[in-house]
Length: 139
Ligand SMILES: [Zn+2]
Image (tube, rainbow, N blue to C red; front, side, top):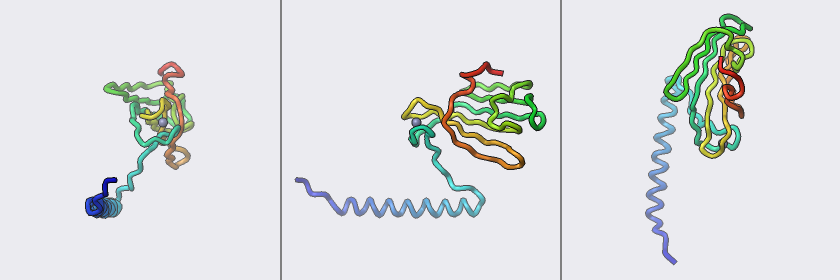
């Protein structure tokens, strides 16, 4: 049986602790400057940490409760902005919203990040979901 070179692992452990301390110091400096702490967004279906955003939708109603407004979709290398009766799939039922679609490297399900304006408050949501454009005609 081969012996483990203990000194090698001890050196790696010290290097790891040094990098961890450096990371925590940078995090504290960023917090002082007003930046929030980073969080890895995991797949809402399987919890896997490797996801990719592939589409972003921005919904802006002309007024509260209006079914018409501006919708911008950015997907891949294309973008599309429309004005009209296009607020049906907005994550906010009454006001403005943003939806970010994520695909997962581990499963074939979609994860949706929503930024929702509702009664003067802004909500951040993470949910299992489908690509709404695959369900209804694009407007
Ligand atoms: Zn997944």
